[in-house]
Image (tube, rainbow over all chains, first blue to last red):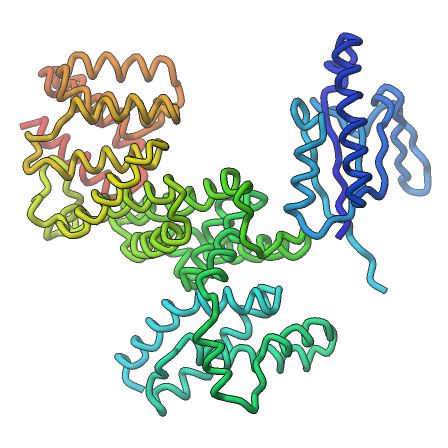
Length: 117
Length: 418
């Protein structure tokens, strides 16, 4: 069963971090990703650029509306994801709880809607 | 069929359906199918049992019937062959009825129910859904009974159950026994659900009945199962001790008119001495392991009350000390209020009132808590500040959510006016 682990954290807070603190988190991410890869559960995973680089697109009545910024202003922003394949939700939660950002942000666990056939 | 036969059969359904449903859930892995099959089996039993008499092993009878009906349903659906293979594998060879019976008697039944309670109380489900699912699957309460017990519309409860079952299926919440290492995270929600169910039964949060006995019974029954499954979990034992000790006072909490009788005025001869002894010895054994938790402390407070022959004999200093330890482990404004009420008997009403007022100043949310004003009124009354006491009672009356509370408060107001 595939799950998307959506990582949310406060990017302003992150931008304000010292280089040393940031380096430590990056090292933790490296270790985590290694472990996930070795377990065979990792399908994909990426870090996203901050929402300052985001563009939101909507099509209404055939017109494409393009706006600067994320789709909604929130306290924490979507900043990265892992796509994993594990037997059940408990396993997905176990991996989610190991994501370094979970310690200060949060991780939303969403099952993939598998298409039949 | 006579109504007594029907009642008898329905009692069997209620006590056995948890086992049967848990077993079907393991075999079928689909809660809806398991429930439908069980319902079919119960309908079959309603015809067969009055005719043939109650089977010696009703759970085995119902399971056999339910498995057969599940197979029928799967065949008619013809959509999930892998499920069909699973159930056929789990069904013993039909040509060997003796072996079938043997196997049924050997089921690790308790294990299935343990898995079921951890599934129903999974932290990925909302607390209200956990409660409803637990009562539905393990308590054998139908949607209407759950709705009635919690004074909620039936449609809301059935929506909640539906959504919870959908989440279990779509997010694939597993049906399995938690690993030892997962228990610290998983057990608290199971205990919290049982505690909540018991409390709702013990002091209903709405309506005109003080007690909802069916909820107390169910919580106690499930707490016994959980404590039996996990003898090494002190808090599971502590919760059971707490429920035994509180439930022992049940009969004395109502007077002849069905009105609530406060601890102070209860006829202690009506307390269930056997159950108090059971709770006390369980608690002592658990406390001796020295891994204290909130449920053990609450049970200890209940035990101190049980130890007092008369209300005047209560060891309030001990109770206040236990509240101190409880608050250190689990801070809560309601706990602080209870501690303040105990302080009345140690340091007098002026001290208790000052503690309550300090709490109200610090926790503005407590201003909406009916019992905060009831406690204030009591302290003010004892200090002969009658006008203020009346004001506090009127404040409480305005906040009262149950008719029982309202009647109690009106009585107190009338007493003040005398």
